[in-house]
Length: 75
Image 1 (cartoon, rainbow, N blue to C red):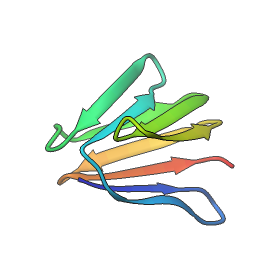
Image 2 (cartoon, rainbow, N blue to C red):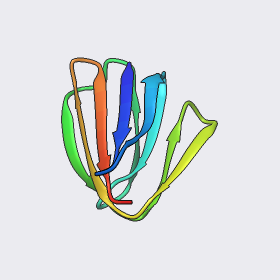
Image 3 (tube, rainbow, N blue to C red):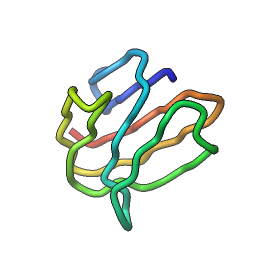
Image 4 (cartoon, one colour):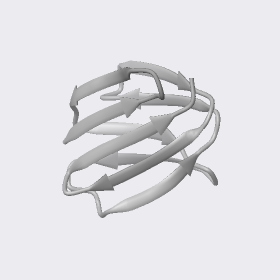
């Protein structure tokens, strides 16, 4: 899947991934290839891409559709 993590000033991460682990508003969850479409708020925590790239976030939101994951975060 295509993954983009963006903040208001720049692209934090962009690339292909098999897994994205997210700190959802109510609970942590993982998005894998071809997951069902989803939109969720994110709480402070860490976004983990492919079990190795760790990106700390304050809060944000995620949209996954058509095998494309876009994550908008605060700095």
